[in-house]
Length: 164
Image (cartoon, rainbow, N blue to C red; front, side, top):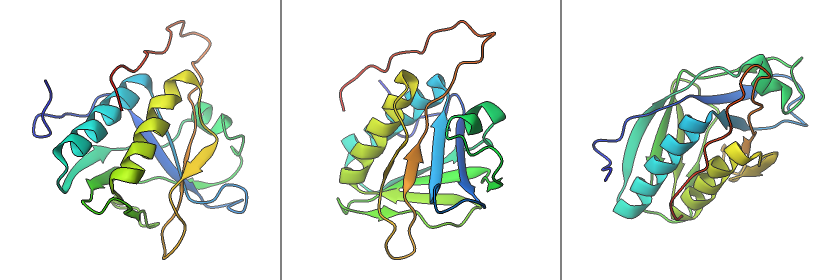
């Protein structure tokens, strides 16, 4: 059984903002490999089961050309943080995701933690191209993007297990 204290990140997480064509691609964008999705889902489940404010620093990688091909905005410039400070708030409707980069900071209450978990859990099965959150009061929305398995990799996505 995992505990919040023993949680360690696995896999990779890409998080970025476009610096061009923001009208069509506003806010933050997220994709992760299968292991990264499972790891983040476990973290969000731990946050929610604890029910108290908590935070974890998550390593972030820049999006690869394969990741950028999914939203089909590869010619646009982007910025990516090196870390994401992911926090759980006791305020159920909390969504705080400003544009700052180092580290990027996302704070969610239970309602958005559930949506964030579901969005990340859907990435391995090809779900994405939709956003959650609010763009009010200096916050940005978050758009999920699925991963394309490179042609030389015949591995199948790992299904996520566990209840929301």
